[in-house]
Image (cartoon, rainbow, N blue to C red):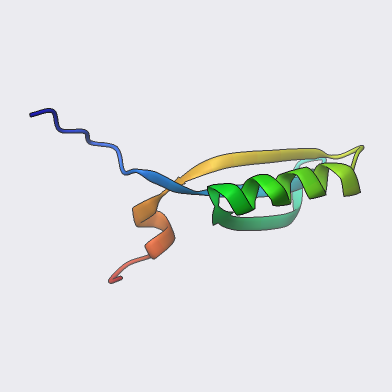
Length: 64
């Protein structure tokens, strides 16, 4: 049996950046995050939009 030390990624964090400052920050499921990322890229065409995976244990938070 193979054991992995990484938590599964179920959510993504999408941010819109104005220089070094995030002006929008949204965490959602992979499908919703992809839609949000596309919408933000259209809305803020001249700004950088990033999408990063978020481990499941971080999304749930402590004690959940």
